[in-house]
Structures are given as C-alpha cells and as structure tokens.
Amino acid sequence: MTGQMNDTTRIALVGATGLIGCRIIEICSEGDDVRIVGIARREATLPDGARMEMFVADPSKWGEVLEAIKPRSLICALGTTWKKSGKDEAAFRAVDHDLVLSTAQAAKDAGLQNFVLISSVGADAKSKNFYLRVKGETEQELSKIGFNRLDILQPGLLKGHRQNDPRFGEFLGILASPLIDPFLGGKWAKYRSVRAQIVAEAALGLAMRRAGGRFTHDNDAIRRAAREWRQRRDKLIGVE
Image 1 (cartoon, rainbow, N blue to C red):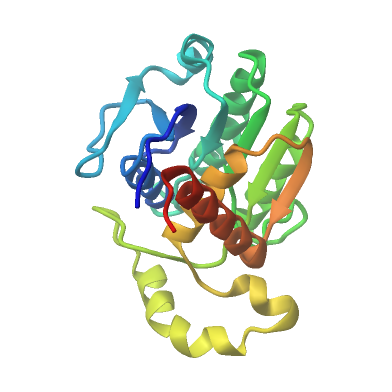
Image 2: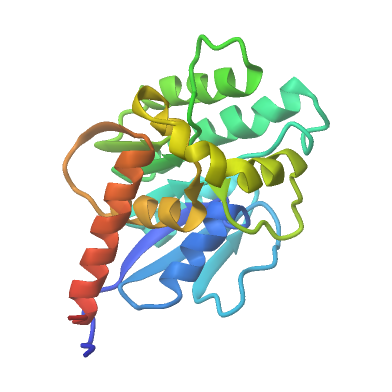
C-alpha cells in the first residue's frame, strides 16, 4: 500500500559522481520526499534515471548557488585518491581538505545549519598516515565553522561498484571482507566493510535531523542511522 508524500525537502550534494554521491542520487530518485540538488565543478555523467537538479560552477561561486537554492542541509561526499592526485600531497590536500573546508564555509555563510561529511575510519589529525591525517585535520577544522549540526561519518571499507574508477587494492579488500569482517570485533568493529548504500542512507537520514551538536558516526552508528532513514521513508509512503 502506498500513499502520496506531501513535502519535498531539498538537500544539496557535492561529490555527486563518487560512490556515495551516486547512491544518494539513486535513492532520492526513487521517491519525492527528498530532492537532491548537486553542485559540481564540471559536467558529469549521472546515474541512470537520476531525478535531480545539477549546477555546474567554479567552487568560488558555490556559495552563491547555495544562497539561491536554499537547501535544508548539505552532504559533502568530496574526495580524491592518492593515485588520482598524482601521488602529490598538495594536490590531495587541495580536495580532501581545502575544498571541503571552503565548501563548508560557503554553506555556513549562505545560512545552512546542517552539514554532513563523508570521512573515513581512522581519521586522526595526529596520524602518521598522510591520508588519515588530512582527513582528521579536515574534521577538526570543520568543527570550528559553527554549524548548528555537524555529522561526520567514518565508514570502514566501502563496498559498491565504482563507475570508471577501478581501485585494485580496494577490490581485493572487498573480496576478502567476508573472511575478515567476522574477526573484527570490539574496538576493531569500526574497520569492518560497509555497503555504500547504507552509508548513503545514513547521510540522508542525518541530513534531515534537527537536534544540534557535533556527531561522529562509526559503522554501527551509520547502520542505525540508515535503518532510521528507511523506517522514516516507509512511513512517509505508507508501506506496511
């Protein structure tokens, strides 16, 4: 049994062409309760059947776009890889740190109160690992911008198909995950693999919350948020 949904909530998304961004678009294209508004630096191929608005602009203009569309919140799924950055630390930092923070500041200046960041398990500003250190520094500085609500997701190994973005190491990790995950208990549970679909659902659910504060979500918390999102959607469309 299905019913008609009433209000449509607009959520802005940067990083629409990545694994999580694509899943978010696919999920929201299936219903009418949430409409995704993507903002990108260049034209990009979107998932089949995507129902969304996409604005292409220089990052320096993203604040103006956000002021114009007035979304409920912003989900940031921006990120590059060590390989894509040409194994250059400055190029990597320019995306995963500088662009994330400038986007967050533009969102705050445009009046947005909620910001959701897809980060990584193990993010730590004091880490010896460059990737995790940059992620941790970004989280740390993001907390100072002053959003009413800030949600930081720290998923483990992401499982899902990446279009035109082969990652051999990640592929091997996904193959091994059914054997490794059962042995990751206690404090190591956060390193278990998690489906990109679940992370996308969690990000959407968290983007809809109103209670203020700064929240960091590991795999278990991400799964709980995803379940709550599905329950909310089922209730909206009258699924019994």
